[in-house]
Amino acid sequence: MKKIKIVADSSANVLTLNKIPFAAAPMKVITDAREFVDDAALDVEEMVAWFDTCKGRSKTSCPAPADWLDAFCDAEEVYCVTITSGLSGSYNSACVAKQMYEAEHEGRRVCVIDSLSAGPELMLIIEKLEQYIEQGMAYEEICKSIEAYKQETGLVFMLQSLKNFAANGRVSPTVAKLAGVLGIRIVGKAGDRGTLEPMHKCRGEERSLAAILSYLKSSGLSKGKVRIAHCRNEAAARKLKDMILSQMGQADVRIHRCKGLCSYYAETGGLLVGFERG
Image (cartoon, rainbow, N blue to C red):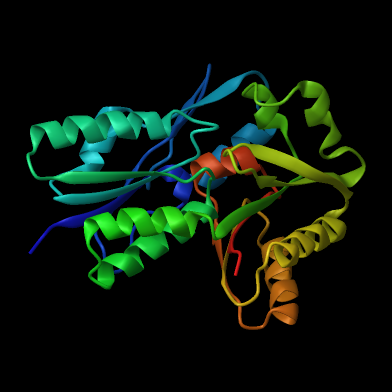
């Protein structure tokens, strides 16, 4: 029987799947004082608490080609999902690993998928890949179909702090100071080119959640999947779930905690919401 495997970098917040073999290639969060490897052994709570008081620059590091090769292991067909190439070199690194793997193992194939997103939208792509594989779809058909499926998903987020974005050089310190001042939260989305785009500056969590719900509705969500990832804010995640189900009762809404990379960017209080457009 053909060995098939799904792999992703750790921005997907996925460590295992129920039916299909899976492996995660770890991202890293690096400062002058400490390095955090985003794998199953990472104490995410401790990392987030450390960054809540940490000052100075920090950065993230994507998996090297060798990390991807370790994740591919000995699979004959690999479906590899990466965080957006608009924010990370993970996709390019995975493409290098694909070339090496296919050159060294005749007949093996790797489909590298640039999510153009992060966190729970990757989770949706992985779930769809799992479904395609279980249905017995051919490799070429899966590669084509998953690119089409990406057009049917989206990501919206709420951040109450941009400190780590500023420390990583992603936003200016001036913009970062807006978040958290007088209860201001940033609500934004993943754009078509895979960059994160702020949409609203909302005062308070209630208005932020209402803005997220409004965006989900305007984007076509009706009875599809919604995956809510939170960083130390399960209460807001549950509140958003209830708001979605009160208006779209057939939606499939699930909540999980952010792993290391997503927790670093979401920070305490943040939500990342992946969804199907309907």
